[in-house]
Image (cartoon, rainbow, N blue to C red; front, side, top):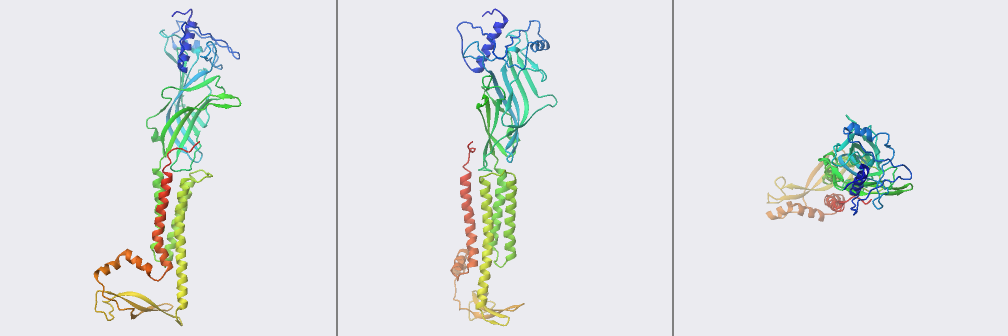
Amino acid sequence: MEYESDSEALDEVLYSLEKDLLGIDDRPTTPTRLVMERPPETPTPEVTVIEADATSDTEIIKKLLGKGYDWRVRPPGINLTVKGSHGPVVVSVNMLIRSISKIDDVNMEYSVQLTFRESWVDGRLAYGLPGDNKPDFLILTAGQQIWMPDSFFQNEKQAQKHMIDKPNVLIRIHKDGQILYSVRISLVLSCPMHLQYYPMDVQTCLIDLASYAYTDTDIEYRWKETDPVQLKDGLNSSLLSFQLNNVSTTYCTSKTNTGTYSCLRTVLELRRQFSYYLLQLYIPSTMLVIVSWVSFWLDRTAVPARVTLGVTTLLTMTTQASGINAKLPPVSYTKAIDVWIGACLTFIFCALLEFAWVTYVSSRNFARATRNEPRSGSLVVANQQVVLPDTAIDFRSNNANAETEVWVKRREFDDAAELLVLGPRRNPSRVNRLHRMLRKCFLVAWVREQLEPADNAKRADLISRVLFPLCFMGFNLLYWTNYSQYQVSAPR
């Protein structure tokens, strides 16, 4: 196909390139010349044609960025629906995520380092045709000004470019006018988090990119067709308490009072690592609850030991809860960790209340028994049942291997106590070996104790030894069944 001039050939190349970027297949039966019409608001600069003798990079760049080029004016786009008309500049975007770090639950933000790339066509910077002897592309320095999209990250809090030891910026101009802009940047982006299932939650963090001043009639952002978002190898190793599950791309074009703005969105799905919280929170708090149950096995008269055990476990659990809440923002809803800590505090506090009730009942029973006993001065006489082996005391029994229950009288003085053996309560019958084995069985002994005359204080300890562990296991069953089923992030 022959062209009347180099400008006509360059117009046809630009038109084909725009069709490829937009993915439209429009093949005319006859050659059509694309006429660059002048937009009403700004004049359209003519396409620069470099002489054949200008082959060095310096000469080509000097001529491209000469007096005829104005970097403040955006290049004309092509409207493929109406040939010869202007449309938005199509900006193709892709990025490489180098690292994700410092995911802050309190401030609801995260830090990310990107290699951000944009590509668009500026016909004013085209300097050759395919097959000529000019270089395939030119590389500009950061100080050489060309028109660039005014892209910004909508959810960005802080940002910086890397300048060591040279500015980490690449500007490449191809001979057909296609421009590649690549820059390494570090961003602090906001990430609103939903913490109902903390620490078994999955958070969705976004990277939103849009034009600040140009509407969608001037700039249209599009994701690169292949691999729009790449991940650096070993990216998950930079995440301390999260794991990157999935990365997806979508569009977030929005309409405001000043117009409709094209927008690109990157969705990062981050799952919190649970192993840390299992070792640092759940196992220690479970051990504290179990330690609080030790008081049920201590003698009810061991008041200092039981008080120390109950108060110490309660204060330790409270301190642990305060440390966990200090790492989280104050929210209006209940978190999964709040349910666990609240349940553990409740079990420990109930164990302390049980001891207080046992002590109160024991004191009341002792006072009631003291009032009913005969008194002689400071002497208190009471009958007490003890078990003594027949080898020590034999009351008309020929069985030397059996145990004999005897009643003794305890005399209590202000500073002394004496046990006087009165004699057997009853004459024990001969028991066989099977009977003795059954009496030593824990279950049989426990049942016998329950059938004896009521002792509410002692019975409370016996029941608590079984009731508290059963209730705690039931709570664990409900807790883990409910929260372990959470697999996706909370709805936005």
